[in-house]
Length: 237
Image (cartoon, rainbow, N blue to C red):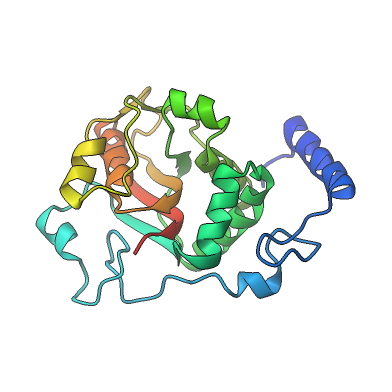
């Protein structure tokens, strides 16, 4: 078990005080108590088979989708808990754009539960980094928040700050598959050799096509990582 640090104790005390002053309300229905009440938790659209065993894209034509068959990715696999729609999309939106940083904890708890049932051969956790300009604009990296919470929950170390995003790439959402790969190709660089021989778990909020996660995996394996797996809260269809 990880020892409780002063920073962790301070954060827990702060969260308790905030809960007393501003009681938590469900982002779905507004009920007081939790950010996601049990009823709204049950509305999260789980990603269930069939899907590609590598990139997790919903797919029923075999083990691997055509993209992964034709262009085998560097990443060993991507796992996503939910489809990025409905309540899952709302949760990510609140975490990412509405400054609801405390929502990272319950989302990370769901990710930890998933890993408990679907373990991956990993030694450390790493958030997909934002470009410094975008991080300054937003004020935080939501993937960092998820990774830090997950680290405490499953007792694995993080390698925060050891992977850098070199280019402020535009959003992947409106791009085609080939444009997405080109958009993030060479966009990441490892700052040290902390990954040498390690299994790395890349954490992000949403997987659009897997191109960003794969670009990270290219950099990580170039720095000596033995394997790289991606874990996201939700995935675009």
